[in-house]
Image 1 (spheres, rainbow, N blue to C red):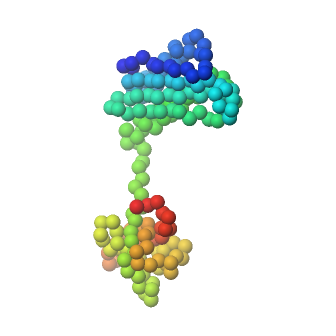
Image 2: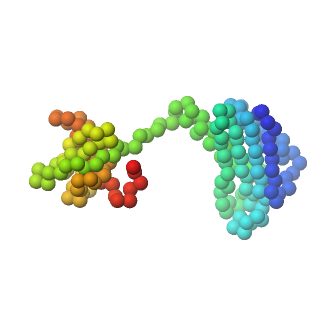
Length: 189
């Protein structure tokens, strides 16, 4: 580590040897997940808030190379085991290990990133023929049939309706095998 471990105590008196225990935890993290450039541990003593009367709260901030950070700040509420400083510290570093493990997996590309479903806009509807066309984000038109619209919502569609869809190759070009109308309050852009 490039800088010494910082330990800040708020309304807490930590026992002798606590600093060494924290440094051992940090060493174990570095052995397993690589170098940390800085580490700050904040120990909040019991009795600070009436909801968490006798519980310790441990917050950890790890600075990693290339400006990356891992922050572990949420202590489980109302868990009586957190009234023991050693347990609370071990639990916080267990969560730090898990967060670093997830971070390492993302960097290695071992975590799948799912792309969102494509969003389209209804541009034409033939009610008598029970079909219509969507305009995709890239400007292409995609055919869909009444049976492709989920939950029988074909009658609710109109020109300008926004939908998510699953595209597949059809006999005459691209077609949507599944069309799901987005509600007017949908968060999708």
